Length: 563
Image: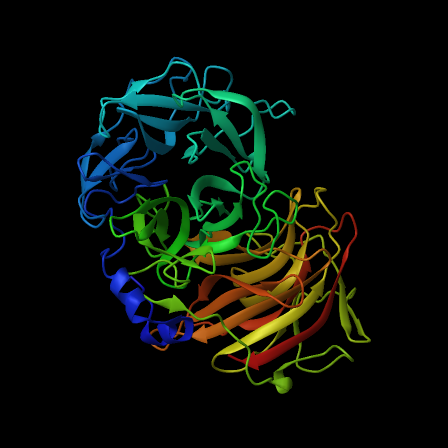
């Protein structure tokens, strides 16, 4: 399995003694390896007996196992060594409103007086196929026995188009004055919050949407220094070796929002914000998402989440259930904002510290182009005669084409990058408007080793949202695997994009980190994708995804600088 090398740590990470000391208190990830190959959507609570209890989503626990464990439960004294203690529910146990074929996902367990309450996603109800709900069960101890409440906490919710909103991923919050709230929802419908009754078993009043649909799921809210922090996951949870799932955060003075990120951007608008908490960082862990949070006796916060080992992404290879073991890493608060291991993100047993953001150094004009004329050095994959260059801009009408899967009909305009470590930057103007559906019009930068081997950083319309996606496609098991991580928020029309490149000296892999700037001043650095050592990726531009309605991408330059 691949790990961060010393050179990559030097590039991404600077270690402080305090960080190293704190990071040593939890052992090698994945912490669930002693009892499970996969333990998705984890959350952890501390019992009255001093043990920590972890709960995961319905899945087999081990490769080759044919049993779907209905909320598997584990116990630990130190957050490091875990023992499986059984399943919350038996095979036939379900609430009255649940269909026979239901699964239970994303548990959330809380102490309530002298008993415990577990909220779960009930994936199938008796209302209609696909009509999910939030159910609850109670127990005298964290390990049960659990008894379902026979009415849903959140009933199935019609979407208005003949379908049902995804009523997934419950998470409870109790405010200092004793009010209880429940957060729930997913990509189809967005994330909502409702007030709970005192016993926590029913919602009351009118729900409030706190995060936009088609971007966020997996809500978890904590209160710190008078702020309520909403943690939410973005991108595809389950794309095997290219899963880009990641966590970002916003905060509010009120548990009902509005939640905004570090730059003041709302999480509940088309160009939704989100300050990165954890994302793929270039080591073996991808798909770093769906978190809980615990605080130990020393006051240190820990993020509990799942991830996918890109070298072993599935139960029952080559394809099957995505294998998502549980990870636990230190959560730091820097300038009032949470980030895993001070920005170094998922640990892999040997690296720890606080990340340094890539910063451009000496300009490299011999590799750059300001688009004043048709400069030499460019090569095409599938030339597009509609592209024009003049007056400091390359203009490219967005093509009705794509690069993912077997499509491979989009044009790609490429240059040879400098050797070594560097940062490539472009200034992109792409007027995609607000809210309307323009799937999947996009433009941006690409690191290209072939039609089935690339990392593409683009401002893109995804249904009603506008996002900056860092997409990745690689060959896998005789086919291709594509996934993406959300790197940031695009500007209203203009967005600055960066790819920071580093070669791993141990194995020669090319590593690319995504940077996004929406105001011309402040950069947000997102996740990392890698391309193999035996490739020679070029860097270039793309503009594709759909020609209707017509829109033209304008690039002001492609500049390289030393990192």
